[in-house]
Image (tube, rainbow, N blue to C red; front, side, top):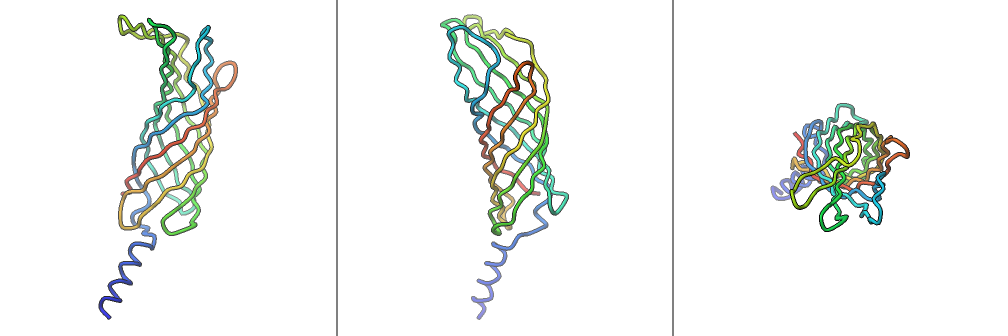
Length: 191
C-alpha cells in the first residue's frame, strides 16, 4: 500500500503543472537564419543566404493567458569574394514577443508568437592580409516585426525548459524589406 501511494505521488509530481515554477525565466538559444536577402550587389559573388544565430532571452509570464519574451539575437554570415577579401553580414537585434501557449499536454506546450524589435544591420569587407574590417555600406538601424510558432517542454519538477521555435522576420530596410526565417532551439531556466 505504501508503494502504491508513493508511486501515485511521484506520478502526480512529474505530470501536473506547477504554477510556482512558471512566471520568470531566462536562457540561451541558437539556430539558423534562412533565406536572408542581402541588399548589397557584389559582382560575380554568390552569397550563401543562411546565417548563424545566437542569442539570449528573458521570459515573463505575468498573465495566465499570455507570456512575454524579451530577447537579443546576433546573426552573421561571412563569405569569400576573392582571395584577398571576404564579405560579412551582421544583424544585431533586440526585441520582444507576446506568446500564446496552448495546454495540449502536461509537459508539451505549443505556442504562437508575434512581436517586434530593432535591428542593426552592418555589411563589412574584411581585408584578409591586414585582418581589418571595412564598412561596405551604410549601417542601418531599422524596426522589424516577426511572427511564428514553437513548442516548449516544461517539466514541473525541473527548472529547465527546452524549446524549438520558428520565427519569420520582416525588417523595414531601405528599398525592399529584408525578410528571413529563423529556426531556433534553446533552453530556458525557469525561476
